[in-house]
Length: 448
Ligand code: ADP
Image (tube, rainbow, N blue to C red):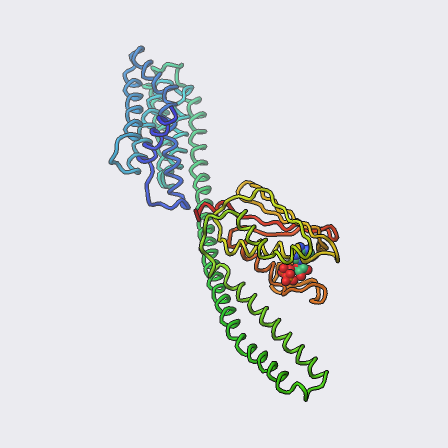
């Protein structure tokens, strides 16, 4: 039954709508409205048109019989016969309805549904054709009313089924029909004008948005390329500073006093830190450019590798790291490994003195995403810094308190965004922290 309805619907929509018209346009929606009208008129014709045919036959009202037959056949023709333009279908449909309403006026008089049909046709015409055809319908309606008025006046509209026509009653009822169709003709197109204006506005906005995104992507790539080049270029003079400082220290060791040795140590240490910062920056600029190969990855294995890398630290601190059944997902493994390593090493590092680190990793499906959480029992983070810590080179501690460059979370954020997700932290300070991030299933599906 469902497939039958589907086939019926798709046939009508194929015949009664045009291809190649943008969804963001009034003509597209007018065609859809027309198709929907045809779609429902066919089953609904069993309520009135088909009984009309039966009544016309049993009472032998030839006009009613022929008119309802014409209406039904035309609607079927419009719906199912291929090779006719949509415009012609619209005209045929409305003409068929028009002749039905005139015949109904003749047989059922002012008490009957003829005038209602005229009003309905005005609306059909306005919904499916240009405003010009609405004016035409309005004039036709007025002419039909005048014609019937004249017919009543001159006495040849008297053999009706539902009581006699009376001129004053007719004028009262039909003038209201003309009034209402006039209102529809002027108001409905206003609605479409508003719709068209909003479509155009939306299209302009979409165009602007697309341009901005393209611009932003270009700028981002430029920036990444810039960071990459700069970091390469910066490392060379840095290497020179370091090696000449070492030469100075070795060659003039006995000529330099303690203060000079201390200054050389600071200079070498500074150069080394600068080198680490540059490496981190380089890594940061590479994410999304260099590491792009997506592979189906068992995240349990990936975690094992990370723990292997961190084993010295884990043993030193006697840390306890637990994880609850991680899934197999198509991700960029190098990047996700870096992400896991950053979060776990932070959990190990940011601990009160002599505390035994405990880190627990959980994962859950949440609607359109996978959500991962890394909870630790460390020093926690004051909520006012929760957003800032993901920025490049942002640190909350001096290097004497905790070592680091301030790039770990910036890199993590970029990796998560590469997987169409987001990252955040929850912590009330002193009670440990929970870093959570999501990976979009949409991204995963695309990359599968
Ligand atoms: P780094 O660790 O190299 O300083 P990150 O970008 O990884 O850089 O971290 C930024 C800051 O966020 C850190 O300086 C630290 O203050 C805070 N932080 C990160 N992870 C944790 C954690 N698990 N517990 C407490 N503070 C953290």
